Image (cartoon, rainbow, N blue to C red):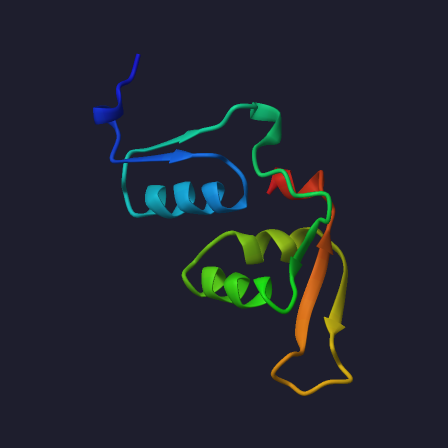
Length: 107
């Protein structure tokens, strides 16, 4: 049995953010524990399996620049990608990719 003091970092939740946080901590050499209620839902995407878009696209680029896995995962599993708001100015244009929900969990 491990106790909380046995770990440098404990991440509660294994969705997108939890997986990225646990991976970042582990890559920094921290002894990391990631806790989830259901092992079948680790890295499971929401009902709308897309990455990118006007708001989340900025976050994805920042995570990617810091060495995160989200950009790599979508590059390897996307079904389609689309540039949004092309009729508007460049400040609101963004790329959004739709992923294969089952395949992205195998990355």
